[in-house]
Image (cartoon, rainbow over all chains, first blue to last red; front, top):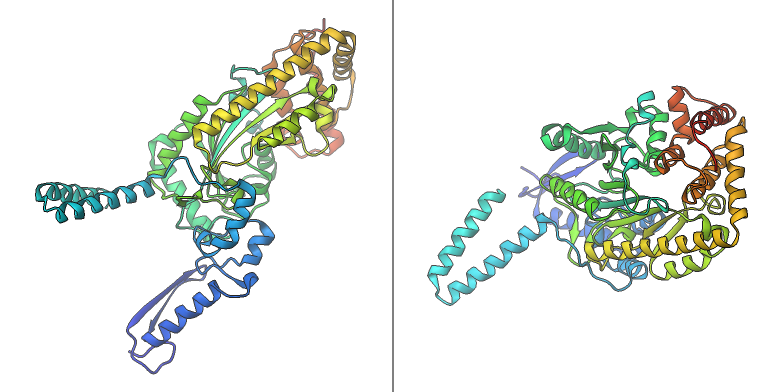
Amino acid sequence: MKCDFCHKNPAIYLLEIKDEKGIRKYSLCGECLHEYIGRLFQIAFSQDKEEKRCPNCGRTWKKIEETGMVGCYYCYSVFKDELGEIIKNYHGNKKHKGKIPKNVSKKEDILKYKIELSKAIEEENYEKAAKLRDFLNKFNERSG
Amino acid sequence: MREFYYKYLKWLGEDNLHKDIILSTRIRLARNVSEFPFPNQASEPQRKRFINKVEWVFENDSNFNKDYDFLRLEKLPRLVSEVLIEKHLISEDQFNNLPGTGLIVKKDGKLSIRLNEEDHFRLQVLSGGLEIDESWKMLQSLENHISEYFDFAFDNSMGYLTSCITNLGCGLRISFLVHLPALTYTGKIKNLFRRLRSSKVLIRGFYGENTEAVAGFYQIASKSSLGYSEEELLRKMKEIALKIVNEEIKARELLFEERRRWVEDIVGRAWGIINFAKYVESLEAISLLSDIRFGIFYKIINLPIKLLDLLLILTLPAHLQVKMGREMDPEERDRVRADLLHDVFKNYKID
């Protein structure tokens, strides 16, 4: 099968684009995929600040400035520097102190146990390692 | 449509602390899910997918469907949506918004969840008077419940991620609707508000700009929830509420000592207009009811404060129209409002 973009090289990647128009699938060669991803990044990290756009939801910095509204969860990473200033102006130089949602604390827990597991293996404490491994397996089953 | 007239107002009758000064306490949590763009950016199909998912949970989770209503705003008559705004259950923004917004509300109106408003979820608890601890417990259990089904958008340093950066942090906002006629009449309010603003509190006239001097109703709300734990913020706002209550009580007592006749005049005039006027405009009603409320504190008028607070909502324009089951022009509304006030007040006396 040939690449859907250049119609020359053999396709080795499958690209799925999900947006308001629905799901579109393309088979691409390595070269075209890299070019496509490169373009996305160019848009996201464009020098022209106003034209900078979130690759997930499509909101531009200009729109964020106009409406005072951020577009999605990922905008907070894409516009980290720009938003950082504004957040500091409104809230002061502060960090979150309250509750952590279950979906995040669960991930953090798993990470903590994984670190302990590798430590136990390093220390050749196999009994402890086996216990931790079993625990982690159960944890993964539960969160399925 | 008429059933919406009295609906969702039962919470207003609660007997919590300092009701003569704090009409209501509202606590709300803002939450978003990471898998959908925020409502203002999401396309109509995306917003509908989100609300369908919530509706599925609502239909299938036995904790919800008994005591709650699930309302899709685009399916409601315009007047009913306006009534929900007047009951503090949806915002004007949500009313003007595109399809796919909704409301889950407990039958007594106390607990509600706005869907696809500014954020995916806005959980709120309303209480009559000053009430924080119980409300917070309710809100937490509601949030825990929702988190069984949805992963919330979160960042370790910014906290819960929201459409507007002003709501970052624990996503908690505490606000009070307060009645401060003595501080307003004596002009002491300016000084109090200057001090409050420096401790990061938002203040505005409750019935829109420039109405504060008329009625003495204000909304006091926490400004930022970033850098505070939930408990810290709740404690801070409770202290502020108590400080406001103290100052208003002091001002009321002093006013009565020094200018008793003036106070009685204010209350008596309001009483006279309510009992004899044939047309009462909406803002005028708020101002009159404010003065009557002032008189209840001094026991000049013997009327239950709960009834008065109910009237403050039941005499609003959309409520009157829903009561009559049809749209009315302003003149007719003013007439119906005057009649309603007569009917209630004829059962009470002034000393």
